[in-house]
Image (cartoon, rainbow over all chains, first blue to last red; front, side):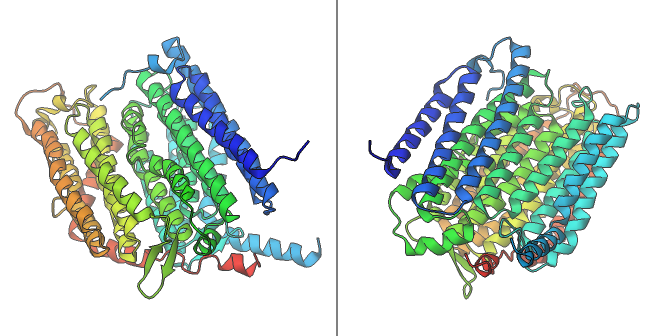
Length: 103
Length: 512
């Protein structure tokens, strides 16, 4: 079994990033969008740890990842809170059903 | 760890905390407000909490003023800087918070919602903006940026049984999450390619590296987060919805404070991270291969044109002001991309001008919301002049100032921006901006025309000395007086345009 190399990890991260963006822009369901956001954030995390590990960099990258996980949790909490409010109001969390503001 | 190192760390932290006064005060104030909200059960709660919030915001400004002349210094081992540029913007953000608290006290739109969390979020947003202004390390930038965003989402969606408000909140958070996610991904690549997260180190290492075409993608993704925060095209979609859906005090605050902080972030990243400072010419020269001034010039051109064009056919005044604020972001970008001290100075001046006139316009809408339900529809403004002559006068001042008509402060703000752009070698952009200003006159004057048309509108002739009304009149005087007596502020901006040139010293002293 060969060891994993940096370009391989970066490719996986790039794929995650693209998939996340696709999910954000094509998903109708708000929870689906949130999952896309999580993919994007984790692709950045994967990049950060991979660079720190393979390029022998300082601990900044690792610490950054911990902070990003925290940020993702905060964002998810706020996102779900807004989804709840949307559901109570519109009885649906499909993003394309929510459109009163136009212009 | 040996004793000497610990002592050194403690000493460095103490020294940092001394320069961290405004932010530390706000943090403590936030917690006090949160506790006060829990324990105070009384009919006077709304006023007590408003008063406390006002005091906390005022205290932050008072603590920031002595730092205005402080020499640029890095604190917390290079995570943040304290320099005249940042402190100036922190004070502007503080004043914007004060005004917002003042008009929120008796705002009808917020009357049915809990008051404690509102002020906690507002002050949290102020704190986040102040942190973002000083952040020069990518972790700090992302943390502060996300703190700004999250508090903004919550403030926009604050009226949780009001459909436009939560709808705007949802749209805002979807765009925001995508934009910050893209920016974070770009930051991870910057870390990988340069091996550092300190902006000053990025600037030191970049010139020795070969800039591959991949950097273009990195810069594009990075710009997603940056343009999102200042509501520039193509990441402006959230702005009209968010400003329309949010309660008017929140909308007024969002157009000023996070935007000012976003511009500070732009300056920090592009000047400190992607430029080389030339002390003899006082300019920041973009590192070859990155080409960010050209990129920003395209964004600025598209932003101001798009904002103005779409504003032309808005029926809702908050939407119209939202598109107008998008176009103003385009004007301000012009100052950033020059990379000169003059540009920075023009930016700092314009931030103040923009705060006075834009908040003034929003607050006029707010003052109207106290007396009528149809305060958002521009067509309903007919006959306003006969009923509220003072309000009509000051609204005309704000709108003409936004259009850049002398002698209001907006004229001088734009004048300095255009002058800086022309002298920085961006004449075509300045010409486009002037043309845009002419176009913008149409929709600003359209509102004024509506107000002075003699036709009995929906407004009942109720005169009310609400806090919003008073704030509007004060800003109305300010927009005129500051326009005529602009030189003190201009002198202030001249002293404050000193961004850290000595930047990265602490870092190098640490031996990194």
